[in-house]
Length: 259
Ligand SMILES: Nc1ncnc2c1ncn2[C@@H]1O[C@H](COP(=O)(O)OP(=O)(O)OP(=O)(O)O)[C@@H](O)[C@H]1O
Ligand SMILES: [Mg+2]
Image 1 (tube, rainbow, N blue to C red):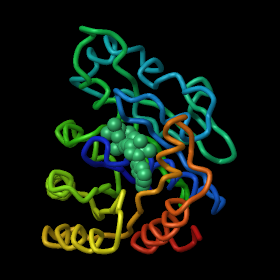
Image 2 (cartoon, protein in one colour):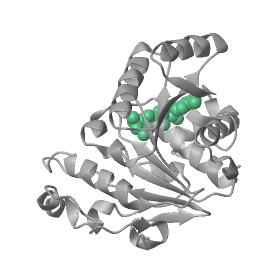
Image 3 (cartoon, protein in one colour):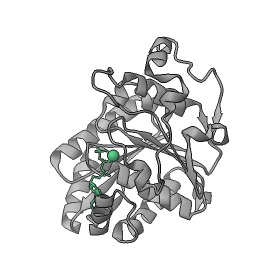
Image 4 (cartoon, rainbow, N blue to C red):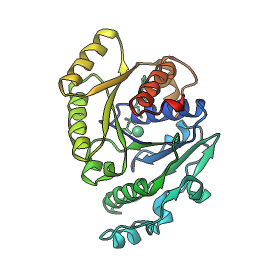
């Protein structure tokens, strides 16, 4: 299963990705996290790695080389990519959790991030997972990746939604764009929820847009504290609540065997 985690900036995409990856690993499953955010670079720390992987952009010869191939972007020469085929330089791995990074903007005037979007889409299309393995994509903020067709290569979209109007509005846009990309299922998870009343009102705004809410994560001081060091939260409500989100994903996708 390939699941893309999308949302407005700052709503908690990377946090939810790290929590889900940890939960899947706790259930004994292999997970590949794809860092598709060309700006932020701290996801590897949240996942417990001491260094980031070399970006896949280097594997395909860098942005300049990729730009020349973008017209006919069979970047990986028609081959399926199995997780064990990814060269170790481009993959960090620990205890069943793996991570790759698409690429980062490193220099001023280096050009736009379109090549990252193309590489992301083509990598996700070619990466082959067995039943029970999960690919979780930490998507860049906003909706530009839909314009680049990245979601045509994933099975499911999970939208992280905070209570404010703008977050809910972007969720509606993501939902429509995901539908237009042919995604089978798109759900929302509420995040940074302070109390039940706000959860219920946010849920109802999403349901008006036809979006199914599959879980809710509270404002968790441990998550925020952990973020100061860029590390994974050691315990707390978010870690417990993500179990129910994972249960819902597995039940929605008919993969109960992942329990
Ligand atoms: N449930 C939560 N409780 C408390 N703090 C949270 C929670 N979820 C996320 N945060 C905090 O909110 C901030 C933004 O979270 P995060 O980096 O995961 O968002 P993001 O959507 O990935 O952001 P970006 O768009 O910049 O990639 C971080 O400081 C994080 O610790
Ligand atoms: Mg992030």
